[in-house]
Image 1 (cartoon, rainbow, N blue to C red):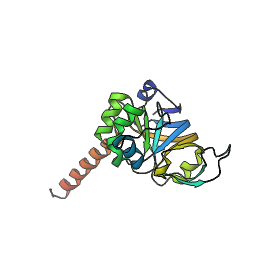
Image 2: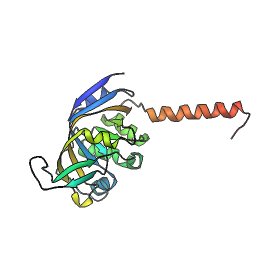
Image 3: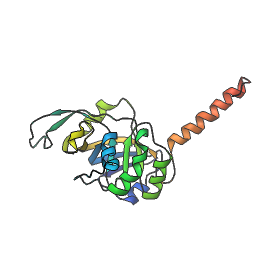
Image 4: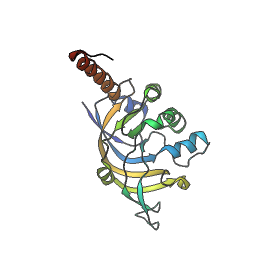
Length: 203
């Protein structure tokens, strides 16, 4: 499997080069987004002044410290613990996030479903999986909170992070219909059937 180092932003060709099982390390910029952010953007018609075109978003509502604005903290925040939340409940936002805002990559945990896989195939996107419980490590990959928008939704604001060596992350879903999460479901179902057959049981 290949290891890709992506300096954000990226284009569709770079994303379509990713295959399930590859590893990815992100550089420069990552945006934090969560349920409330997307509800306001797509259900309530809010727009953002931040340019997400070609970028990656991470499903997060970070724990941050509010500080005086300075060259080291231009948004008035410093990172404290920035973890990842479960992605599946944000399934319905993937296509509008890509179509309207130009997002290319989603970083999250637990995987996403067929609607997301279809959007990735049609528009050129991928899901980068991160292990749950790795928030302390993730936070070390974030150098600065550069900007924040929709901060009335805090902590589910739209965050712009400056990152360095964010990863490696695992390509869990790609633009070619591949999904590690689908494979796991098939494998689990197959093993379950074999176990039931082995003990002479059935559903």
